[in-house]
Image (tube, rainbow over all chains, first blue to last red; front, top):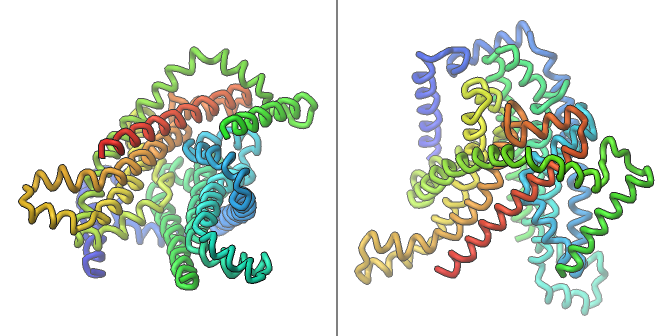
Amino acid sequence: MLLGRAAVLLLALVVWELVAAPLNPLLYIRPSSLPATVLRMWRRPELPPLPQHVWLTVQEIAAAYALAIAAGLWLGFLLGLRRTVGRIYEPLLAALYAIPSVVWYPSLMLFFGLGPASKIAFGFLLGFFPIVLAVLAGIRQVPAQLITVAVSMGAHPATVFRKVMLPAMASTLVGGLRTGLALSVVGVLVGEILGSRSGVGYVINYAYGLMMTHEYAVLVLIVAVAVLAIDGAGALLEARVRRWAG
Amino acid sequence: MLALQVLSLAALVVGWEGAVRLGLADPLFVPAPTAVAAALAAGAGEVVPRLADTLLKALLGYGLAVVLGVSGGLVLGSRRLVHDVAMPYVVALYSIPKVLILPWIVVIFGLGLGTAVLTGMLFAVFPIVLMVAAGTRDVDPALITAAVSMGATRGQVARKVLLPAVLPSVLAGMRVGMVFAMLGVLLAEMFAGNRGMGFHMQRLALAFKAPELFAATVIVSALSIAVVLFLEHLNQRLGRWR
């Protein structure tokens, strides 16, 4: 299986190399030219200093995700634990989810400007929805009779929450938190690429604006690998939580 | 229920209007609902061609994504070997932010139709593939065995057993795919367009025309909710057919 997967990747690289060979080398980057590009970028950096911009993007993502978790958990439990409020507002929330999220970005840009604030706001907005919806779905999964039994045996509300509700909703909740992180990352990157003066997205735009396409390809690969690594870490965490919740 | 929903939306609009009138919110950034309504009415004539432009691109990208996504999902879901080898890559491509390759697409396909359609397709195809593949894998093999043992032909199995069993996930994928196709098209237009709602909205934001921008946001939002509701309606009718 692993062998098959590696073969597919290798085949894709070879096909790309062969297809790109007769084409414009500036537009169709050959994989074989990338190691030299990495070396060149390391030795003689022509791009804006990468560590500083990466650090800014990481900070933006962290802020957006933290806000999304706080607001998402709060609103999710508020709507989920109060049935009547939930029945009124859940459909409205679902309707908002049906709107392609980029429509909010120009308004956020107008409101927060081109700096990090608009990126944080957009990353927050994207990360927030899956978290709220996961909390709502999770609460619905908690078997009502378990709560009744625990309460009738005299369990404290905090104990009911920790011992009954949390295990029952854990895997859904963690799934939502993982999607939320992925979307916060996407939101910040989209914001940076649509218009910014700093951050990884800015450097990517900068490289492409000057037609430094080899450097651009390397940057895209680095960001893609970083995103996949974050997602992989999230998947491991999710599996652990699922085991804990049984 | 509906009355309470309408009531709270109305309260939100009235409160918003009040906040702007009382000077609690700066109308330069947060225009009053009345100002947005005025902009909506004033721009109604120009908005239709722009909206049609964006919707056409989204439908083209969506159509491509449905064809590619459904067939890809069926193959991935029904062939075990293909699934085991290719699935990690499909999931990886799904989770990598597509916006990263937008600059590259723009340089190759230019500012017009091609870039927007391709981006819309790219955003929509992966969720469709994943949902259809998952649905196809979940088809109960016992149903197929039973149909074959009762003498059903391949065509009959496909039409009478597989299609109804896979249909819900295909429809679910198609519903999600439409939102993603709109998203991709709007994003491409915002990044490097010269027409369409996305381009228009980005220009309004940079020109600080908040009422017009809010009006455009309302229109695009209403359109996407309408499209999703239409697909949902279609979904229910097909559900009755099953």
